[in-house]
Image (cartoon, rainbow, N blue to C red; front, top):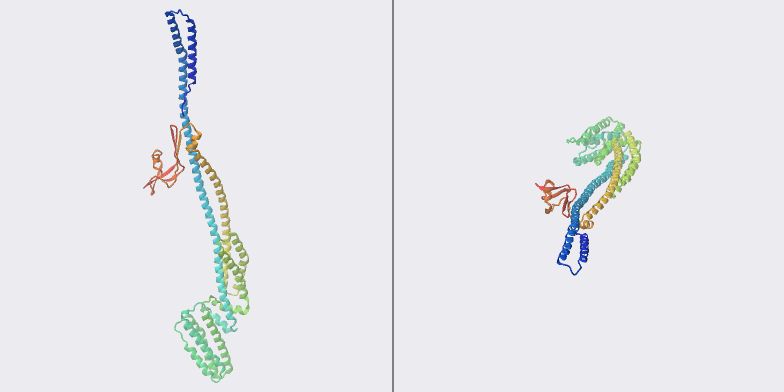
Length: 522
Protein backbone atom coordinates (compact mmCIF):
# COMPACT_ATOMS: atom_id res chain seq x y z
CA UNK A 1 0.00 0.00 0.00
CA UNK A 2 1.29 3.51 -0.86
CA UNK A 3 1.68 5.71 2.25
CA UNK A 4 0.77 9.42 1.63
CA UNK A 5 1.39 11.94 4.52
CA UNK A 6 -1.38 14.47 4.85
CA UNK A 7 -0.01 18.00 5.57
CA UNK A 8 -3.31 19.72 6.22
CA UNK A 9 -3.02 19.61 10.04
CA UNK A 10 0.54 20.89 9.94
CA UNK A 11 -0.33 23.77 7.63
CA UNK A 12 -3.24 24.75 9.82
CA UNK A 13 -1.04 24.79 12.94
CA UNK A 14 1.64 26.80 11.19
CA UNK A 15 -0.86 29.35 9.84
CA UNK A 16 -2.42 29.70 13.30
CA UNK A 17 1.04 30.26 14.81
CA UNK A 18 1.92 32.86 12.17
CA UNK A 19 -1.44 34.58 12.68
CA UNK A 20 -0.78 34.91 16.42
CA UNK A 21 2.71 36.09 15.73
CA UNK A 22 1.55 38.81 13.33
CA UNK A 23 -1.14 39.91 15.78
CA UNK A 24 1.38 40.23 18.62
CA UNK A 25 3.84 42.02 16.41
CA UNK A 26 1.13 44.45 15.31
CA UNK A 27 0.16 45.08 18.93
CA UNK A 28 3.73 45.78 19.93
CA UNK A 29 4.28 47.91 16.87
CA UNK A 30 1.37 50.15 17.81
CA UNK A 31 2.98 50.66 21.22
CA UNK A 32 6.25 51.75 19.70
CA UNK A 33 5.07 53.97 16.79
CA UNK A 34 6.53 57.27 18.05
CA UNK A 35 9.24 58.90 15.99
CA UNK A 36 11.11 59.77 19.12
CA UNK A 37 11.88 56.19 20.11
CA UNK A 38 15.19 55.81 21.63
CA UNK A 39 17.60 53.10 20.98
CA UNK A 40 16.73 51.58 24.30
CA UNK A 41 13.05 51.53 23.41
CA UNK A 42 13.83 49.90 20.13
CA UNK A 43 15.81 47.23 21.94
CA UNK A 44 12.83 46.66 24.26
CA UNK A 45 10.60 46.35 21.18
CA UNK A 46 12.83 43.76 19.58
CA UNK A 47 13.19 41.91 22.84
CA UNK A 48 9.44 41.82 23.27
CA UNK A 49 8.90 40.57 19.73
CA UNK A 50 11.62 37.92 20.00
CA UNK A 51 10.46 36.84 23.44
CA UNK A 52 6.94 36.40 22.18
CA UNK A 53 8.19 34.50 19.11
CA UNK A 54 10.30 32.08 21.10
CA UNK A 55 7.80 31.76 23.90
CA UNK A 56 4.92 31.11 21.48
CA UNK A 57 7.01 28.64 19.44
CA UNK A 58 8.10 26.71 22.53
CA UNK A 59 4.88 26.84 24.50
CA UNK A 60 2.28 26.65 21.80
CA UNK A 61 3.48 25.72 18.31
CA UNK A 62 6.15 23.14 19.08
CA UNK A 63 4.19 21.05 21.64
CA UNK A 64 1.23 20.94 19.32
CA UNK A 65 3.46 20.17 16.35
CA UNK A 66 5.27 17.48 18.30
CA UNK A 67 1.95 16.02 19.38
CA UNK A 68 0.76 15.93 15.77
CA UNK A 69 3.99 14.34 14.62
CA UNK A 70 3.85 11.69 17.35
CA UNK A 71 0.21 10.98 16.57
CA UNK A 72 0.93 10.76 12.87
CA UNK A 73 3.88 8.46 13.40
CA UNK A 74 1.80 6.27 15.68
CA UNK A 75 -0.94 6.23 13.06
CA UNK A 76 1.55 5.30 10.39
CA UNK A 77 2.97 2.51 12.53
CA UNK A 78 -0.53 1.20 13.18
CA UNK A 79 -1.32 1.36 9.47
CA UNK A 80 1.87 -0.55 8.67
CA UNK A 81 0.99 -3.16 11.27
CA UNK A 82 -2.55 -3.40 9.98
CA UNK A 83 -1.25 -3.65 6.40
CA UNK A 84 1.06 -6.52 7.39
CA UNK A 85 -1.78 -8.29 9.18
CA UNK A 86 -4.06 -7.68 6.22
CA UNK A 87 -1.42 -9.10 3.87
CA UNK A 88 -1.23 -12.20 6.03
CA UNK A 89 -5.01 -12.41 6.06
CA UNK A 90 -5.21 -12.05 2.26
CA UNK A 91 -2.48 -14.65 1.78
CA UNK A 92 -4.27 -17.02 4.17
CA UNK A 93 -7.57 -16.38 2.41
CA UNK A 94 -6.03 -17.13 -0.99
CA UNK A 95 -4.44 -20.26 0.46
CA UNK A 96 -7.81 -21.38 1.82
CA UNK A 97 -9.30 -20.91 -1.64
CA UNK A 98 -6.41 -22.87 -3.15
CA UNK A 99 -6.94 -25.61 -0.56
CA UNK A 100 -10.65 -25.62 -1.40
CA UNK A 101 -9.73 -25.87 -5.08
CA UNK A 102 -7.59 -28.94 -4.31
CA UNK A 103 -10.36 -30.47 -2.22
CA UNK A 104 -12.89 -29.93 -5.00
CA UNK A 105 -10.45 -31.38 -7.53
CA UNK A 106 -9.80 -34.40 -5.28
CA UNK A 107 -13.51 -34.95 -4.70
CA UNK A 108 -14.13 -34.65 -8.41
CA UNK A 109 -11.39 -37.19 -9.18
CA UNK A 110 -12.75 -39.55 -6.52
CA UNK A 111 -16.27 -39.22 -7.89
CA UNK A 112 -14.91 -39.78 -11.41
CA UNK A 113 -13.21 -42.93 -10.17
CA UNK A 114 -16.42 -44.03 -8.46
CA UNK A 115 -18.35 -43.31 -11.65
CA UNK A 116 -15.88 -45.43 -13.65
CA UNK A 117 -16.26 -48.27 -11.16
CA UNK A 118 -20.04 -48.07 -11.32
CA UNK A 119 -19.94 -47.81 -15.12
CA UNK A 120 -17.69 -50.87 -15.21
CA UNK A 121 -20.21 -52.64 -12.99
CA UNK A 122 -23.01 -51.64 -15.37
CA UNK A 123 -20.97 -52.99 -18.29
CA UNK A 124 -20.27 -56.22 -16.39
CA UNK A 125 -23.99 -56.59 -15.61
CA UNK A 126 -24.80 -55.92 -19.27
CA UNK A 127 -22.21 -58.54 -20.24
CA UNK A 128 -23.85 -60.87 -17.74
CA UNK A 129 -27.22 -60.25 -19.39
CA UNK A 130 -25.65 -60.99 -22.78
CA UNK A 131 -24.22 -64.19 -21.28
CA UNK A 132 -27.64 -65.09 -19.92
CA UNK A 133 -29.17 -64.53 -23.36
CA UNK A 134 -26.47 -66.71 -24.92
CA UNK A 135 -27.08 -69.31 -22.22
CA UNK A 136 -30.71 -69.47 -23.26
CA UNK A 137 -29.85 -69.42 -26.97
CA UNK A 138 -27.39 -72.28 -26.65
CA UNK A 139 -29.69 -74.22 -24.36
CA UNK A 140 -32.17 -73.94 -27.21
CA UNK A 141 -29.49 -74.96 -29.72
CA UNK A 142 -28.53 -77.93 -27.56
CA UNK A 143 -32.13 -79.04 -27.47
CA UNK A 144 -32.40 -78.35 -31.21
CA UNK A 145 -29.35 -80.55 -31.82
CA UNK A 146 -30.97 -83.36 -29.82
CA UNK A 147 -34.17 -82.90 -31.82
CA UNK A 148 -32.23 -83.03 -35.07
CA UNK A 149 -30.60 -86.27 -33.93
CA UNK A 150 -34.04 -87.60 -33.05
CA UNK A 151 -35.37 -86.45 -36.43
CA UNK A 152 -32.48 -88.24 -38.15
CA UNK A 153 -33.21 -91.39 -36.16
CA UNK A 154 -36.88 -91.16 -37.07
CA UNK A 155 -35.90 -90.86 -40.73
CA UNK A 156 -33.88 -94.05 -40.36
CA UNK A 157 -36.83 -95.75 -38.71
CA UNK A 158 -39.06 -94.68 -41.58
CA UNK A 159 -36.59 -96.10 -44.10
CA UNK A 160 -36.57 -99.45 -42.31
CA UNK A 161 -40.32 -99.35 -41.84
CA UNK A 162 -40.88 -98.75 -45.56
CA UNK A 163 -38.59 -101.68 -46.26
CA UNK A 164 -40.45 -103.93 -43.85
CA UNK A 165 -43.84 -103.02 -45.32
CA UNK A 166 -43.01 -105.02 -48.46
CA UNK A 167 -41.91 -108.10 -46.53
CA UNK A 168 -44.21 -111.12 -46.21
CA UNK A 169 -45.86 -111.85 -42.89
CA UNK A 170 -44.24 -115.10 -41.82
CA UNK A 171 -42.88 -116.73 -38.71
CA UNK A 172 -39.58 -117.29 -40.50
CA UNK A 173 -39.14 -113.56 -41.01
CA UNK A 174 -39.88 -112.79 -37.37
CA UNK A 175 -37.32 -115.39 -36.38
CA UNK A 176 -34.76 -113.80 -38.68
CA UNK A 177 -35.42 -110.33 -37.36
CA UNK A 178 -35.13 -111.47 -33.76
CA UNK A 179 -31.99 -113.48 -34.44
CA UNK A 180 -30.39 -110.67 -36.39
CA UNK A 181 -30.58 -108.19 -33.45
CA UNK A 182 -27.07 -109.27 -32.47
CA UNK A 183 -25.78 -108.21 -35.92
CA UNK A 184 -26.95 -104.60 -35.67
CA UNK A 185 -23.94 -102.34 -35.65
CA UNK A 186 -21.39 -105.19 -35.74
CA UNK A 187 -20.79 -105.45 -39.48
CA UNK A 188 -17.22 -104.68 -40.53
CA UNK A 189 -17.67 -102.99 -43.88
CA UNK A 190 -14.00 -103.41 -44.67
CA UNK A 191 -15.23 -106.82 -45.88
CA UNK A 192 -17.96 -105.27 -48.05
CA UNK A 193 -16.81 -107.03 -51.23
CA UNK A 194 -16.91 -110.38 -49.46
CA UNK A 195 -20.32 -109.60 -47.98
CA UNK A 196 -21.72 -108.85 -51.40
CA UNK A 197 -20.13 -112.03 -52.68
CA UNK A 198 -22.08 -113.79 -49.92
CA UNK A 199 -25.26 -112.05 -51.04
CA UNK A 200 -24.67 -113.14 -54.62
CA UNK A 201 -24.03 -116.73 -53.47
CA UNK A 202 -27.26 -116.70 -51.44
CA UNK A 203 -29.17 -115.54 -54.52
CA UNK A 204 -27.78 -118.51 -56.44
CA UNK A 205 -28.97 -120.82 -53.67
CA UNK A 206 -32.41 -119.22 -53.81
CA UNK A 207 -32.56 -119.70 -57.58
CA UNK A 208 -31.73 -123.42 -57.21
CA UNK A 209 -34.37 -123.72 -54.50
CA UNK A 210 -37.02 -122.12 -56.73
CA UNK A 211 -36.11 -124.45 -59.58
CA UNK A 212 -36.32 -127.46 -57.24
CA UNK A 213 -39.95 -126.61 -56.54
CA UNK A 214 -40.83 -126.67 -60.25
CA UNK A 215 -39.05 -129.75 -61.67
CA UNK A 216 -40.17 -132.98 -60.04
CA UNK A 217 -38.19 -135.39 -62.25
CA UNK A 218 -34.76 -133.90 -61.46
CA UNK A 219 -35.64 -132.56 -57.96
CA UNK A 220 -33.23 -134.91 -56.18
CA UNK A 221 -30.31 -133.76 -58.33
CA UNK A 222 -31.31 -130.12 -57.76
CA UNK A 223 -31.43 -130.59 -54.00
CA UNK A 224 -28.03 -132.31 -53.99
CA UNK A 225 -26.55 -129.48 -56.03
CA UNK A 226 -28.28 -127.02 -53.66
CA UNK A 227 -26.74 -128.81 -50.69
CA UNK A 228 -23.32 -128.69 -52.33
CA UNK A 229 -23.75 -124.99 -53.02
CA UNK A 230 -24.59 -124.35 -49.37
CA UNK A 231 -21.56 -126.31 -48.21
CA UNK A 232 -19.20 -124.46 -50.54
CA UNK A 233 -19.47 -121.20 -48.64
CA UNK A 234 -17.16 -121.62 -45.65
CA UNK A 235 -15.66 -118.50 -44.05
CA UNK A 236 -12.52 -118.55 -41.94
CA UNK A 237 -12.65 -114.90 -40.78
CA UNK A 238 -15.09 -115.61 -38.00
CA UNK A 239 -16.82 -112.20 -37.93
CA UNK A 240 -20.36 -111.75 -36.65
CA UNK A 241 -22.10 -112.15 -39.98
CA UNK A 242 -20.19 -115.34 -40.85
CA UNK A 243 -20.85 -116.77 -37.39
CA UNK A 244 -24.53 -115.93 -37.68
CA UNK A 245 -24.71 -117.47 -41.15
CA UNK A 246 -23.02 -120.70 -40.11
CA UNK A 247 -25.08 -121.16 -36.92
CA UNK A 248 -28.49 -119.82 -37.86
CA UNK A 249 -28.68 -120.16 -41.66
CA UNK A 250 -26.28 -122.75 -43.04
CA UNK A 251 -27.03 -125.39 -40.43
CA UNK A 252 -30.82 -125.00 -40.85
CA UNK A 253 -30.52 -124.95 -44.65
CA UNK A 254 -28.51 -128.21 -44.58
CA UNK A 255 -31.08 -129.69 -42.23
CA UNK A 256 -33.85 -128.79 -44.71
CA UNK A 257 -31.91 -130.42 -47.59
CA UNK A 258 -31.41 -133.59 -45.58
CA UNK A 259 -35.11 -133.82 -44.76
CA UNK A 260 -36.12 -133.13 -48.35
CA UNK A 261 -33.69 -135.78 -49.70
CA UNK A 262 -35.00 -138.26 -47.12
CA UNK A 263 -38.65 -137.71 -48.03
CA UNK A 264 -37.84 -137.81 -51.77
CA UNK A 265 -36.23 -141.19 -51.25
CA UNK A 266 -39.28 -142.29 -49.18
CA UNK A 267 -41.57 -141.09 -52.00
CA UNK A 268 -43.49 -138.75 -49.69
CA UNK A 269 -44.13 -136.03 -52.27
CA UNK A 270 -46.61 -134.05 -50.17
CA UNK A 271 -44.12 -133.72 -47.34
CA UNK A 272 -41.44 -132.79 -49.85
CA UNK A 273 -43.63 -129.91 -51.11
CA UNK A 274 -44.24 -128.73 -47.55
CA UNK A 275 -40.56 -128.80 -46.73
CA UNK A 276 -39.66 -127.02 -49.97
CA UNK A 277 -42.23 -124.31 -49.16
CA UNK A 278 -40.88 -123.86 -45.63
CA UNK A 279 -37.30 -123.87 -46.96
CA UNK A 280 -38.20 -121.22 -49.56
CA UNK A 281 -39.89 -119.00 -46.98
CA UNK A 282 -36.90 -119.38 -44.67
CA UNK A 283 -34.36 -118.52 -47.35
CA UNK A 284 -36.47 -115.69 -48.75
CA UNK A 285 -36.56 -114.14 -45.29
CA UNK A 286 -32.79 -114.64 -44.96
CA UNK A 287 -32.15 -113.02 -48.33
CA UNK A 288 -34.31 -110.01 -47.47
CA UNK A 289 -32.55 -109.68 -44.12
CA UNK A 290 -29.08 -109.99 -45.64
CA UNK A 291 -29.90 -107.37 -48.25
CA UNK A 292 -31.24 -105.08 -45.52
CA UNK A 293 -28.19 -105.58 -43.30
CA UNK A 294 -25.74 -104.81 -46.08
CA UNK A 295 -27.74 -101.84 -47.40
CA UNK A 296 -28.34 -100.24 -43.98
CA UNK A 297 -25.43 -101.49 -41.87
CA UNK A 298 -24.83 -97.96 -40.40
CA UNK A 299 -28.47 -97.41 -39.50
CA UNK A 300 -28.72 -97.19 -35.65
CA UNK A 301 -32.33 -98.30 -35.84
CA UNK A 302 -31.38 -101.79 -37.08
CA UNK A 303 -31.50 -103.08 -33.53
CA UNK A 304 -35.22 -102.26 -33.43
CA UNK A 305 -36.10 -104.44 -36.44
CA UNK A 306 -38.22 -107.00 -34.53
CA UNK A 307 -40.17 -104.29 -32.67
CA UNK A 308 -40.66 -102.32 -35.88
CA UNK A 309 -41.96 -105.35 -37.68
CA UNK A 310 -44.41 -106.19 -34.90
CA UNK A 311 -45.45 -102.52 -34.62
CA UNK A 312 -46.10 -102.42 -38.34
CA UNK A 313 -48.30 -105.48 -38.04
CA UNK A 314 -50.25 -104.20 -35.01
CA UNK A 315 -50.38 -100.40 -35.66
CA UNK A 316 -49.50 -99.64 -39.27
CA UNK A 317 -49.81 -95.83 -39.00
CA UNK A 318 -48.34 -95.29 -35.54
CA UNK A 319 -44.85 -94.09 -36.52
CA UNK A 320 -46.24 -91.73 -39.16
CA UNK A 321 -48.44 -90.03 -36.55
CA UNK A 322 -45.55 -89.91 -34.09
CA UNK A 323 -43.24 -88.41 -36.69
CA UNK A 324 -45.85 -85.77 -37.55
CA UNK A 325 -46.04 -84.68 -33.89
CA UNK A 326 -42.25 -84.60 -33.61
CA UNK A 327 -41.70 -82.61 -36.80
CA UNK A 328 -44.23 -79.95 -35.81
CA UNK A 329 -42.27 -79.20 -32.61
CA UNK A 330 -38.96 -79.52 -34.41
CA UNK A 331 -40.13 -77.04 -37.03
CA UNK A 332 -41.05 -74.50 -34.31
CA UNK A 333 -37.64 -74.78 -32.64
CA UNK A 334 -35.83 -74.74 -35.96
CA UNK A 335 -37.73 -71.61 -36.99
CA UNK A 336 -36.87 -69.89 -33.69
CA UNK A 337 -33.20 -70.87 -34.07
CA UNK A 338 -33.05 -69.42 -37.57
CA UNK A 339 -34.73 -66.22 -36.37
CA UNK A 340 -32.14 -65.88 -33.60
CA UNK A 341 -29.29 -66.55 -36.05
CA UNK A 342 -30.52 -63.75 -38.32
CA UNK A 343 -30.81 -61.27 -35.45
CA UNK A 344 -27.58 -59.54 -34.33
CA UNK A 345 -28.75 -59.60 -30.72
CA UNK A 346 -31.55 -61.67 -29.24
CA UNK A 347 -34.22 -59.95 -27.17
CA UNK A 348 -34.24 -61.67 -23.79
CA UNK A 349 -37.93 -61.17 -23.01
CA UNK A 350 -39.03 -62.28 -26.48
CA UNK A 351 -36.80 -65.36 -26.29
CA UNK A 352 -38.14 -66.30 -22.85
CA UNK A 353 -41.72 -65.93 -24.05
CA UNK A 354 -41.11 -68.11 -27.10
CA UNK A 355 -39.34 -70.77 -25.04
CA UNK A 356 -42.13 -70.69 -22.47
CA UNK A 357 -44.67 -71.29 -25.23
CA UNK A 358 -42.61 -74.21 -26.54
CA UNK A 359 -42.30 -75.69 -23.05
CA UNK A 360 -46.02 -75.49 -22.41
CA UNK A 361 -46.87 -77.22 -25.68
CA UNK A 362 -43.99 -79.59 -26.41
CA UNK A 363 -42.70 -80.85 -23.06
CA UNK A 364 -45.95 -82.72 -22.13
CA UNK A 365 -46.18 -84.06 -25.69
CA UNK A 366 -42.68 -85.58 -25.61
CA UNK A 367 -43.29 -87.05 -22.18
CA UNK A 368 -46.47 -88.74 -23.41
CA UNK A 369 -44.70 -90.03 -26.54
CA UNK A 370 -41.85 -91.49 -24.46
CA UNK A 371 -44.31 -93.36 -22.25
CA UNK A 372 -46.20 -94.67 -25.27
CA UNK A 373 -43.02 -95.80 -27.07
CA UNK A 374 -41.85 -97.64 -23.97
CA UNK A 375 -45.00 -99.78 -24.18
CA UNK A 376 -44.07 -100.76 -27.75
CA UNK A 377 -40.55 -101.66 -26.53
CA UNK A 378 -38.94 -99.27 -28.98
CA UNK A 379 -36.00 -98.78 -26.66
CA UNK A 380 -33.83 -96.74 -29.04
CA UNK A 381 -36.66 -94.32 -29.74
CA UNK A 382 -37.76 -94.24 -26.10
CA UNK A 383 -34.22 -93.48 -24.94
CA UNK A 384 -33.96 -90.60 -27.38
CA UNK A 385 -37.34 -89.25 -26.35
CA UNK A 386 -36.28 -89.44 -22.71
CA UNK A 387 -33.13 -87.51 -23.57
CA UNK A 388 -35.35 -84.87 -25.17
CA UNK A 389 -37.56 -84.87 -22.06
CA UNK A 390 -34.51 -84.26 -19.90
CA UNK A 391 -33.56 -81.52 -22.35
CA UNK A 392 -36.95 -79.85 -21.87
CA UNK A 393 -36.62 -80.17 -18.09
CA UNK A 394 -33.10 -78.78 -18.18
CA UNK A 395 -34.23 -75.91 -20.39
CA UNK A 396 -37.11 -75.15 -18.03
CA UNK A 397 -34.81 -75.14 -14.97
CA UNK A 398 -32.16 -73.09 -16.75
CA UNK A 399 -34.71 -70.60 -17.96
CA UNK A 400 -36.15 -70.11 -14.47
CA UNK A 401 -32.68 -69.56 -13.01
CA UNK A 402 -31.58 -67.29 -15.86
CA UNK A 403 -34.78 -65.24 -15.66
CA UNK A 404 -34.14 -64.73 -11.96
CA UNK A 405 -30.52 -63.75 -12.67
CA UNK A 406 -31.64 -61.48 -15.49
CA UNK A 407 -34.14 -59.67 -13.28
CA UNK A 408 -31.48 -59.24 -10.61
CA UNK A 409 -28.96 -57.93 -13.16
CA UNK A 410 -31.55 -55.60 -14.70
CA UNK A 411 -32.39 -54.17 -11.27
CA UNK A 412 -28.71 -53.62 -10.52
CA UNK A 413 -28.20 -51.92 -13.88
CA UNK A 414 -31.17 -49.66 -13.23
CA UNK A 415 -29.92 -48.80 -9.74
CA UNK A 416 -26.36 -48.16 -10.92
CA UNK A 417 -27.51 -46.05 -13.85
CA UNK A 418 -29.39 -43.85 -11.37
CA UNK A 419 -26.21 -43.62 -9.30
CA UNK A 420 -24.23 -42.61 -12.40
CA UNK A 421 -26.81 -39.95 -13.25
CA UNK A 422 -26.59 -38.63 -9.66
CA UNK A 423 -22.80 -38.61 -9.83
CA UNK A 424 -22.95 -36.75 -13.14
CA UNK A 425 -24.99 -34.01 -11.46
CA UNK A 426 -22.50 -33.75 -8.59
CA UNK A 427 -19.58 -33.79 -11.01
CA UNK A 428 -21.07 -30.93 -13.01
CA UNK A 429 -21.53 -28.93 -9.79
CA UNK A 430 -17.97 -29.66 -8.63
CA UNK A 431 -16.62 -28.86 -12.06
CA UNK A 432 -18.36 -25.47 -12.00
CA UNK A 433 -17.01 -24.76 -8.50
CA UNK A 434 -13.50 -25.78 -9.55
CA UNK A 435 -13.59 -23.50 -12.58
CA UNK A 436 -14.91 -20.63 -10.45
CA UNK A 437 -12.11 -21.15 -7.94
CA UNK A 438 -9.56 -21.44 -10.73
CA UNK A 439 -10.70 -18.12 -12.18
CA UNK A 440 -10.73 -16.54 -8.72
CA UNK A 441 -7.14 -17.64 -8.10
CA UNK A 442 -5.77 -16.00 -11.24
CA UNK A 443 -3.57 -12.97 -10.39
CA UNK A 444 -5.63 -10.63 -12.56
CA UNK A 445 -8.86 -11.40 -10.71
CA UNK A 446 -7.14 -11.27 -7.30
CA UNK A 447 -5.71 -7.80 -7.99
CA UNK A 448 -9.16 -6.63 -9.00
CA UNK A 449 -10.46 -7.67 -5.58
CA UNK A 450 -7.44 -6.42 -3.59
CA UNK A 451 -6.52 -3.36 -5.63
CA UNK A 452 -3.87 -1.88 -3.30
CA UNK A 453 -1.95 -5.14 -2.84
CA UNK A 454 0.85 -6.63 -4.87
CA UNK A 455 -0.40 -10.23 -5.32
CA UNK A 456 1.23 -13.05 -7.26
CA UNK A 457 -0.13 -16.64 -7.44
CA UNK A 458 1.68 -19.41 -9.34
CA UNK A 459 -0.52 -22.43 -10.17
CA UNK A 460 1.48 -25.64 -10.84
CA UNK A 461 -0.80 -28.48 -12.05
CA UNK A 462 0.19 -31.97 -10.85
CA UNK A 463 -0.66 -34.52 -13.53
CA UNK A 464 0.16 -38.20 -12.88
CA UNK A 465 2.63 -39.45 -15.44
CA UNK A 466 4.31 -36.08 -15.97
CA UNK A 467 7.60 -34.93 -14.42
CA UNK A 468 7.55 -32.19 -11.79
CA UNK A 469 9.14 -29.06 -13.36
CA UNK A 470 12.74 -28.45 -12.27
CA UNK A 471 12.14 -24.96 -10.70
CA UNK A 472 9.89 -26.55 -8.09
CA UNK A 473 12.01 -29.54 -7.09
CA UNK A 474 13.06 -27.74 -3.90
CA UNK A 475 9.51 -28.34 -2.62
CA UNK A 476 10.18 -32.10 -2.45
CA UNK A 477 12.73 -31.72 0.32
CA UNK A 478 11.04 -28.76 1.96
CA UNK A 479 7.77 -30.65 2.49
CA UNK A 480 9.19 -34.20 2.67
CA UNK A 481 7.13 -35.40 -0.29
CA UNK A 482 6.60 -39.18 -0.41
CA UNK A 483 8.55 -41.13 -3.04
CA UNK A 484 8.29 -44.55 -4.60
CA UNK A 485 10.75 -46.59 -6.64
CA UNK A 486 9.71 -46.76 -10.29
CA UNK A 487 11.12 -47.52 -13.72
CA UNK A 488 10.06 -44.13 -15.06
CA UNK A 489 12.12 -40.95 -14.97
CA UNK A 490 12.95 -39.31 -11.66
CA UNK A 491 10.36 -36.99 -10.14
CA UNK A 492 7.54 -38.46 -12.20
CA UNK A 493 4.24 -37.67 -10.50
CA UNK A 494 2.55 -40.93 -9.52
CA UNK A 495 -0.39 -39.72 -7.43
CA UNK A 496 -1.69 -36.26 -6.61
CA UNK A 497 -4.62 -34.92 -4.61
CA UNK A 498 -4.58 -31.45 -6.12
CA UNK A 499 -2.15 -28.86 -7.49
CA UNK A 500 0.61 -26.70 -6.05
CA UNK A 501 -0.07 -22.99 -5.46
CA UNK A 502 2.72 -20.52 -4.65
CA UNK A 503 1.20 -17.38 -3.10
CA UNK A 504 2.83 -13.97 -2.43
CA UNK A 505 0.98 -10.95 -1.05
CA UNK A 506 3.28 -7.91 -0.56
CA UNK A 507 6.06 -9.35 1.59
CA UNK A 508 4.02 -12.33 2.79
CA UNK A 509 4.63 -15.75 1.13
CA UNK A 510 2.56 -18.93 1.44
CA UNK A 511 2.34 -22.28 -0.32
CA UNK A 512 -0.54 -24.73 -0.79
CA UNK A 513 1.04 -28.20 -1.13
CA UNK A 514 -1.37 -31.15 -1.61
CA UNK A 515 -0.55 -34.76 -0.86
CA UNK A 516 1.31 -36.27 -3.81
CA UNK A 517 3.85 -39.00 -4.57
CA UNK A 518 6.77 -38.81 -6.98
CA UNK A 519 8.80 -41.62 -8.44
CA UNK A 520 12.46 -42.29 -7.87
CA UNK A 521 14.31 -44.36 -10.40
CA UNK A 522 15.40 -47.58 -8.74
